[in-house]
Amino acid sequence: MRISRFLSVAVAALALGFTSQASANTQLRLCVFDIIGSSGDIFNLMRDYRTAALGEGVDFRMRAFTDENIAYEELTGGQCDVAAITGIRGRQLNSYTGSLDSIGAIPNYDALRMVVQVLSSENPRITPNLRHGPYEVIGIAPMGAAYLFVKDQSINNVNALAGKSIAVMEYDVAQGRMASRVGMSPVMSDITNFSGRFNNHSVDICFAPMAAYSALELYRGMGPDGGIVDYTLGQLTMQLIARHDKLPEGFAAWSRKYMFENLYDRAQAVVDNAYNDVSDDRWIRVSEDDTLRYDEMMREARIDLTEQGVYSKEMMSLLRNIRCRLDSSRGECSENLE
Image 1: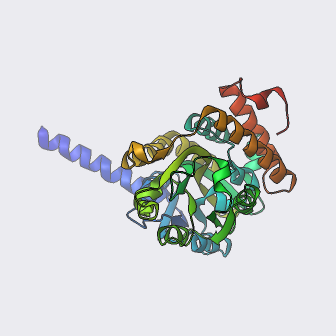
Image 2 (image 1 turned 120 degrees about the vertical axis):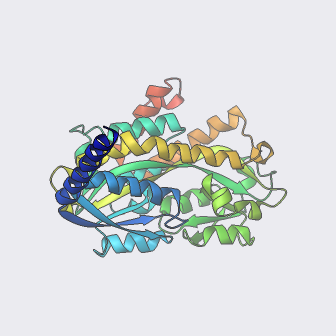
């Protein structure tokens, strides 16, 4: 009886496997940016995504990239059909979703989850914005809030930033302009060298998610006197960007739904765990008055950058609506400037 049951299960498993393989008649190349490489958390999430995609008839051949610029160029050059890269890097391919990572626009993880839920809902007023030119965004996951890492805890307000040097991503004009706006000296960097510049004291400040504290050893650059300013400058996201003409019919909608319902919370758990690496004395607390002042400063910067075409006006409007839905007492809710 026991042997018979075992054989039944085995036959069923083989049949399921045969069905999955047989239905996977679309071969695609998936390029994944993960600063740790193929053993990193993002790559592991994408492994599960690949397994699920087999059931939809898509067999991904995966490659890991520790340099995001190369993953981006492989996508735009046609060597990748789908790439998992940051929203900031992908902004040149889709300004709407690329604006999720705009400065100060998503103040907390509750707001981010609500935004991604809306973007994954297949709402006919939203979905057309996910496609631009040959590219379509087919999934979004959190990578963590971004903070200022500084070498001196006396840098506890915006006035103290003046005259300091900061590593900014060379492809994100918003970071450079915001740094200049508060009197800092932006040093053009990329994902491969910004942490090294901070750790070897070439710059005073860098901008990064909490995961970078251990993964990129930012505690070395902070030294004994450094800290992390407890103000959310933005939310970094991982976005799956596909060459639309490579996708089977209906796959993009399936992918967005699968990413949100199955991988979003797992990615958020990875983000949450990263906070455990940081002791409480490393945080530089920001007063409530300064928080309100910075919120207003960020809003003014977003309005300018939207007028200059850096950010998507439609996304800025959606994010304002969500901020006000979660906290109607915000000053911006009484006027519609975004």
